[in-house]
Image (cartoon, one colour):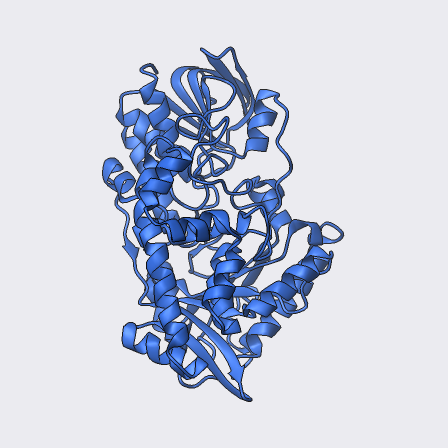
Length: 520
């Protein structure tokens, strides 16, 4: 579109899901809104694409599951979004006494209890599991409703949790303490810990508790901690948000990169660039749906410390799911939930230690799930009829620093060793199951943190833009957790307080801050 100029009540920098949430709320409230998106499409990291040449499979290329999106946002904006639950939570293969086995969590209480007993020899670990997740459930029911309210104080959130043992376990002590006190089986301990390490490079006993903050955000979603599959892929969600914003009157300009924000605290000007040249849009408020470092670049402020991502993301299309060495479980169940690989407690510690020393883990931990088992609509009719399936792999403990010497070579090395860890639990090589694209190449793509930084502007490839924050007020966080040192410039991306994940929460909260101000 022609470079937008003129004056708006709000200019939103970045058309990712949070920016679109803010745009929809403000436009529905009668504000004039302009969204500037650098890429030629909206959605940011929450998109669906066809990554394989000539293959009709629309994958959630980057972010892929939904847990933290409040129902309030869906209802307020009238979004046509469907989420499907997964009956199977996870499967973790293992070898015990020389035989292949594993732990299947899900499919009903009886089945899960039997799986724990079969793996560990008693009901002790299952009872500990129940007690632990009953506790996280109480925390979730107390914390999640506060995410779309003004920031509570630490004491207010503590009262909302209403459980001193839970507060100490999740908010005050390193998570490793609770894991080691409550569980004895190494594999069970590892399965619990993994939610603390998604995109977060930390040890179980890290004194900064960044692993605890990551764990908290992974167990509070919806007040239950469930992670659901977006029907149609993640792009269906962001397309619905873009439609809602446009329907309410927001102007969404793709192919327009914001390059500078100038403000006196009351009015602002946003300079943006496109293939047609530069333009300037005036605004009463500017909402930045980008990282804190990008915010600093736009406003000329001192940038925060560098962020670092720590994940390997792999997308695959298979002609069929591989057979497992553990014949007691159907691959269609094992891959429907989270398939944990090399994520025993000791394995996670070893991988962390090696990566912290500057070397790629020799047994990289990762987790896989198959979107198409729950939602086959992402596959063309022919592929679905022939039994094709997608696989999404998320690798842990692969910090950006490892890739700096040679991104391509290290990515390939880690991909090879990660898939070898998976193959160790399969009855046939994964390579034999991979589909090929129109050019005869395997349908497999891998992305390092440096790739995500280049493609999406994620600082250091960090999927949260920076380390996750506690969901309560601290010095300088402001009333909604989106405020900056400029009165009319707000941060509405994942780097805001209570940001991270596909939630829309920072977008909602930034919009509420603008509307509360009582002006455009």
